[in-house]
Image 1 (cartoon, rainbow, N blue to C red):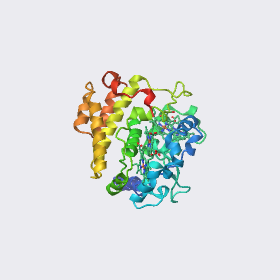
Image 2 (image 1 turned 60 degrees about the vertical axis):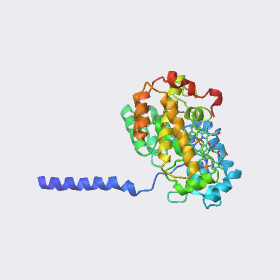
Image 3 (image 1 turned 90 degrees about the horizontal axis):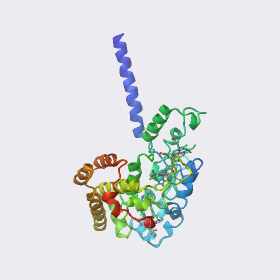
Image 4 (image 1 turned 30 degrees about the vertical axis):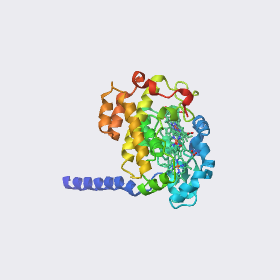
Length: 315
Ligand code: HEC
Ligand code: HEC
Ligand code: HEC
Ligand code: HEC
């Protein structure tokens, strides 16, 4: 009996290992497009439709600079270049395996994660007929965990979203090689070292329809803005440190060093949180996450308030 049991155990382990290894050879998740979210997220969609992310889809390829930048990487059309699509477009394929085509500018899934693997989980409240109101608290916890594992970036994982901003706005997408980066920069592709999270996320981008009044796009309080400001500087520091190893192109290096210096200067003002010093001496993702955890719910206005952009300057 015992030996049979052990064999069975081994077989089960092999089966589990097989199941666990399989996803590694499966295709990466793909974006399904903003229309997938529209049905249930009308307010967020309306906000997005007024942003430059939405509007640039119709214009950016016609930009004077665009042709020269595409040419510099050996391409002809911006819409056909995968390297440009990485940041400028949401590419959607009609069927799995079909080539993805750019259908919109940066959209919902550019920030919240490509949804092909998580959309079903997101919309399952506990069975085919279950409504949101029927969902048990335990099911909700499980649903959030499963969706996260499948690549959804919830708003509670704010840092995860902000890393996406930085990968595009810091010109630091892992799928870009150093040669492409150097060519783009030499053809005058912009890299703005002044991308600062409060200014860039609390203007046109802001969608915060939270309970208790989910009809209202809530502005952040000064305390929340101070936390967001520090979070943005932490993400920028980690992104710029990482970027410096990607290309030795002179323009790229200069812009990334500026990002790094600006983030360091801003963070140095925060003396009350020991995790800041740890991040400054070792700018890793892990240390940034520790800092984010340490400042949760804190009001850092006294230390960083004077550096936070005024509302009139929000993008
Ligand atoms: C069938 C309806 C439905 C669809 C389709 C849908 N959602 Fe949701 N979503 C909801 C509801 C309802 C909630 C809030 C309750 C919950 O899920 O816990 C929510 C919550 C969210 C949240 C988290 C909000 C928070 O408070 O943290 C995000 C982010 C989100 N959705 C993004 C998306 C994106 C992106 C898409 C499209 C790829 C999408 N959703 C498609 C119904 C939907
Ligand atoms: C790693 C992300 C990333 C990649 C890859 C990328 N871009 Fe950009 N691009 C951006 C961002 C972010 C901006 C906005 C910069 C700013 O103004 O702060 C931008 C701006 C531009 C602009 C200026 C638009 C304007 O409104 O003035 C052009 C033109 C452009 N990109 C063309 C291209 C082309 C062509 C490619 C492909 C060879 C490409 N980009 C690849 C992120 C990227
Ligand atoms: C530029 C990045 C970006 C894009 C594009 C984006 N989001 Fe978000 N989203 C965020 C951030 C950041 C938050 C967290 C806001 C907060 O808590 O301050 C958020 C929060 C949310 C929330 C929770 C707050 C709320 O309004 O209910 C939902 C739901 C959501 N997004 C859905 C969407 C949908 C649907 C789209 C596309 C129509 C979209 N988002 C496009 C960055 C983005
Ligand atoms: C997939 C890449 C991508 C992601 C992720 C992304 N952006 Fe962008 N964003 C762009 C590009 C590209 C442009 C420039 C479009 C153009 O000029 O044609 C842009 C433009 C903007 C603009 C308009 C700037 C201006 O000068 O008018 C704002 C504001 C902005 N982004 C904020 C954010 C924030 C905040 C986040 C994260 C929460 C974010 N973006 C995430 C690619 C991205």
